[in-house]
Length: 107
Image (cartoon, rainbow, N blue to C red; front, side, top):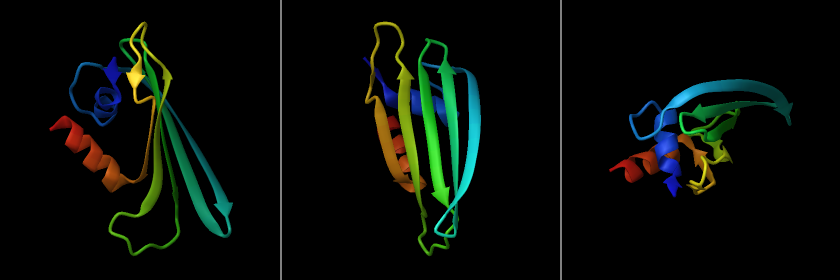
């Protein structure tokens, strides 16, 4: 079984057992209750055939938080042959939690 951390690390430009061979990004923007919301979605294709999508959604509402709320999702779209990736889905509610998770699992 492959661990999702290896793919997330590669997405963040860190060396590891898998490499990104291509990626495609889409951008979307809309207004919700007078607040602008953006969503960036990138599908990453890896050298072993896996495909992982990273989505980041955030609003432009003013915030006093040190690490503003946003929604970051990782979804495994395609697993490599006979190698399931676990977990197949991972969600964070801000970039600080994503960074902490990445550092914790790479330590």
